[in-house]
Length: 335
Image 1 (cartoon, rainbow, N blue to C red):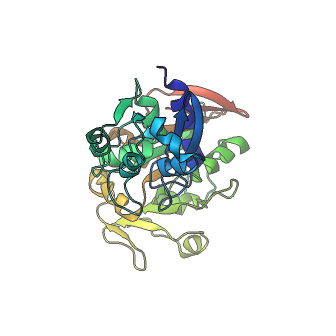
Image 2 (image 1 turned 45 degrees about the horizontal axis):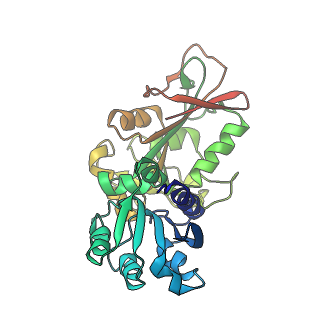
């Protein structure tokens, strides 16, 4: 039997939880009886009912569950957290057949949900390829399998390969990208937990680090603190969210991680303890390059303008990117 139609619907439903399900994965589920969907649901928010629960509850005639197939984009959970295990709910209703997009890498699930279903006589199948289901939750997947946040890198460079002029902190930064690229950046910010910049970038650019041109919650500013570039009180007081600082020592009055900010491998996993599961790295050039060199560039968003300058700050050397689209007069590339 071709399960693709119903698994695709699971993906569509799961995406309704984008921006609200975090730190949980986005999950969609449907109940199918005689080739027709009789129930569907998705996970909206951490602490609320999972997709399988919503799908099963939405079935008007519960007696049909014993002759139905449940499709879900992610392996049903097998542990008690804020909600009971979904695998127990499925078996308690006597659903005979479950089709799953991909397994769950969380240590408390990771095959345990499937084992429970099969132990209760339920036929379990998986999608032919799990890749699309894993990409749906690439942040969650990175958190679980690599024990660190998912890092998205973003910068703008001109046609000559520079991201700024050589300048002092008193001089204005070079304006490279246009308004559509700015809008896209704020859209990116609306889907992350934190925005990371160096304290040098904070001193030189005094960025707002908000989603002001897009609907969404402002992420937490994460500052890699260097003693030569103290955080300016006027800039800090103007931020919507108080910064989280990484440095040794931490500046007085700030919370964060006491660590050498250059030791990426040491402090990056610790960000998960503070709910910083997806971080957008915005600068400066050396910081961006350090993430690329460490293999921590999970996705890259680069805007390229048509302008050129003779000298300036060289843009990061990135992996090969795919040209995706034009944003006004800018080219938008991403990995």
